[in-house]
Image 1: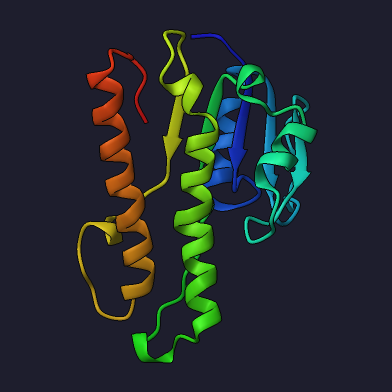
Image 2: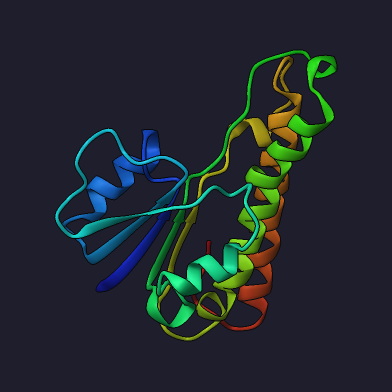
Length: 170
């Protein structure tokens, strides 16, 4: 599969940055979308678009950056966050933010690129879940809940893609 343009959401550090570095030899262009710029230089075929998934206007920002479904051949979503703490310590705003980034924004991204996923042309899509979304553990209940949402969304979307005859999967 030849990848002209890949979008890595959450690609400024950690696993996301490692994905960007691995994709550098496989893609013509890589766009890293994150709330912070990487601390290390990106490959020469990569560029950075600043965007916080807590901000409104995700779809508009993607369009303004030329990251429409027609222009992207691969989507990798590694964005997410959480903290280790007893559930009772989370404030309402923190609960909203964790769900917004880890579940709602990721769902919106998958929906935005769904026409590519459900099409007959190859479209590579990877979403970073977590074992925490499958196994309950103390002190990570909020994070686990949001990752469970993404794990189940992925399963459901993949079942729909298969039922509709698309060969693409998340």
